[in-house]
Image (cartoon, rainbow, N blue to C red; front, side):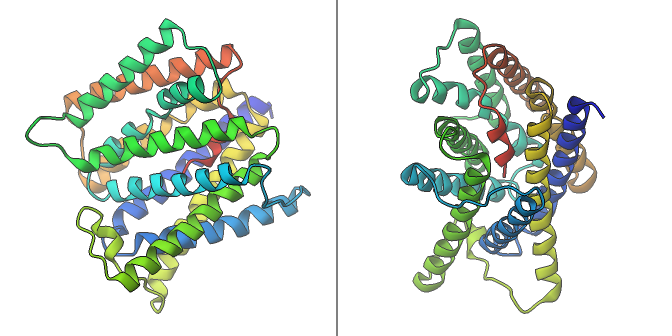
Length: 311
C-alpha cells in the first residue's frame, strides 16, 4: 500500500478513536472524576507506548535534554486539555472542537516568537480570518459571555505552545520522549490536583467537574475509564504511525475530519446543532487552518509530527 494512503487511513482511524473517546468523556464528565479519567488515561498511555516501542524495537527513554521545557510542556498540556474536557460537558462538541482547531493560528504566532519564523501578510490575514471565526462561534457581548467557550481556545493556545517547544527541542528529544513527557505531566498533574482538592476540600464552581470523587470500587465505572484510556492511546499511536509513514500535506488537513465527526455525533447523540453563525465560524477556522498548513509545508516550516500528541 502507498505510504501516503496508509498515512491517510491511519489519520482517519485516529480521528475515529478520538471522537469516540471524547463522546464517552462528554457522556460521563459530569458524573465521574475527570481527574481520575486523565490519570488513568495517562497510565494506560504510558504502558501502551512502552509496548509499542518494544514491538517496534525502539529505545525507551523518559528523560529529556531540556528538563525545564519538558516540565513546562507537560504541565500546560495537561492543564489545557483538562479545561477542554470540562468544556465539552458544558457546550456542544462541535463548538468545542472547532475552537480547539484554531491551534495552527497559535502555532504560527508562537513560531514567530520562539522559532524566529517569518510571517508574511498572507498568514497574518489567515490568523485574522481564523479569529473572526472564533468570535462568530463564541459570540461575546459586554453583558454576557460563556466562559466555557474560552476553554477550548486556551487549550489551542497551550497545545500550540507545547508543539512549538517540541519543535524547538526535536533535535535532542525524540517524538516518543516528548510523548512520554505529556503522559507523565498528566499523571503527576492529575494526581496532585486530586490530592489538593481532597485534602483542602476546595469547592470549585466554574470547574465543578473537578469536585467529583474518584470511584475505584465499581467495575462498570472502571471499565468505562479503561475504555476511554485505551481509545485515547490508540488514537495517539495511530497518528504517530501516520506521520511517520505519510505526507504531512495529506495528513494534517485530514485531521479536520474530526469536525465532521463532532457535528454528526453532537446532532445524533446529544441533539446539538451549531447555529448559522457558528457554521460560518467553523468554515473560517478550517479554511484559515488548512491554508496555514499548506503554506508552512511549502516553506518546510510546519510544526509537524507533534500534532500526534493531541489529547
